[in-house]
Structure formats: structure tokens, C-alpha cells
Length: 167
Image (cartoon, rainbow, N blue to C red; front, top):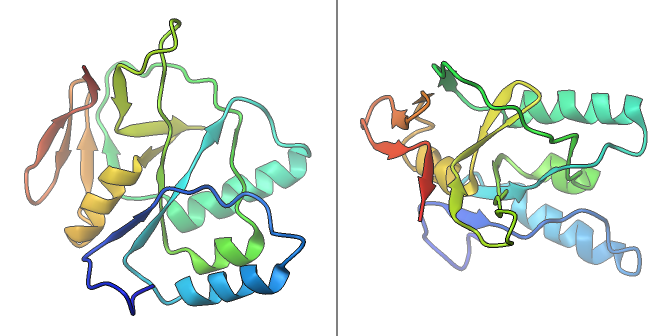
């Protein structure tokens, strides 16, 4: 992929959740092609249903946090509960190849319309940035972020955005 672009960062928002059982060689080729792309941020999706196996889920959450958690200082006074019970699981080869991840979660209202952009999600006590915010952080040398109930602030550049932007 880096042979085709000189982009500062690549956002890949497709969810790779299962291997292509009919063409495992194609998956292996894809994973091999992205393993050296440090500037790629892959999407992940928090889910409202539990893992099939509780122990496997606990293990996956731990590995995911160790690899993809970022430097976010949480200064929120009010923390709203979420109902996420699991994260979309990457196939092992993809998990090993990916270097950066950001949430592609969007919250629709009861009427089905999208009115807010989730700049970060709280998954089991760890804050993860959106795909776009993770891309911004990467472009700024993995700049740390601070969040309060109103704003997300980048520590060095002082970029300040609403924590939840309503259209």
C-alpha cells in the first residue's frame, strides 16, 4: 500500500472480522502487505453483545488494550455509562499486522438518525479515539489527548474539539 501513496496517514475503516476461508493465501498476502505500514490506522467496532466465550473475550480485551490503547488523560467529571460488551475481533494475522486502531462507532438516535460524532469511546474503562482522532494523533507524533465533559484537547498542538459534536 505504501508503494501507491505518500500519504502522511492512511485511515482504513473496513472491518476485517473473519478470514476468507476460501482464499487464506489472499489474506496472508494482505496482512503481509500492511505489516510494515506504520502510518495506517485501522477501524474497530465496539459491540453491544458479548464474546462467544468469556475467557477468550477477557484475553482479547487485554491484548487489544496492550496494543492499541493511547495516551488519553480522562478529566471528565461525569462519565456516562455505555453498553459495549465486546470489540470486533480481528483475525490473528491482521491483529499482528495492524499498528494503530481507532473506533468507527457511530451513535444513532431512537429515530435512526445520526446526530453525533463519537470522537472517542469508553470501553470497559479505557478511552479509545475515533478513527479520525487517532489519525490526527498519529500525524502529530502520537500526541497525548485530554478529555473533559466538554472538550477533547491535544496536549501539544492545543487543538480543541467538542467531546461530542451535535449536528
